Amino acid sequence: MKLFKDMKSIKLKLLIFILLIVLLSIIGISLSSYSFMKEKLYEEKRSKLKELVESNLGILEYYHKLDKQGSLSQKEAQAKSKELIKSKL
Image 1 (tube, rainbow, N blue to C red):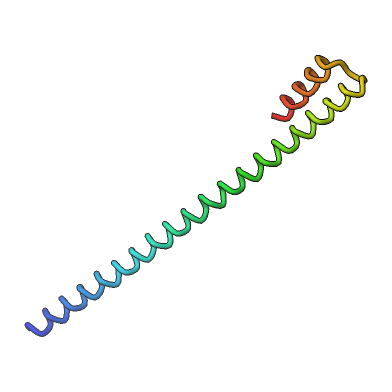
Image 2: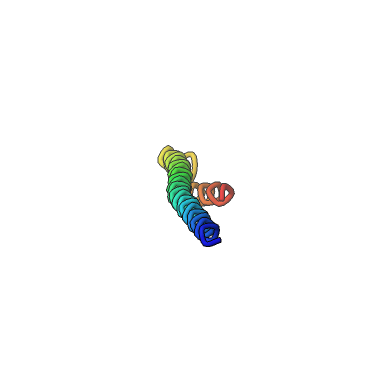
């Protein structure tokens, strides 16, 4: 009878040990995935912001050129560039 109790105890300890290993593995994988996804989202936001800034800079340069050529007054060029940039947001 004692041998049966000892085996049951060993099985229980082994089961608990295996469950702990699995749980720790899942936690480790989750933390690693979280860190990777956080970095990926940050890079994506950074890329979109860079594109937006470059696009707005292009708009400003275009209207500045029109102002220098005399096609538009400075106030008209500023107003049109502001309007176009606001419409993109």
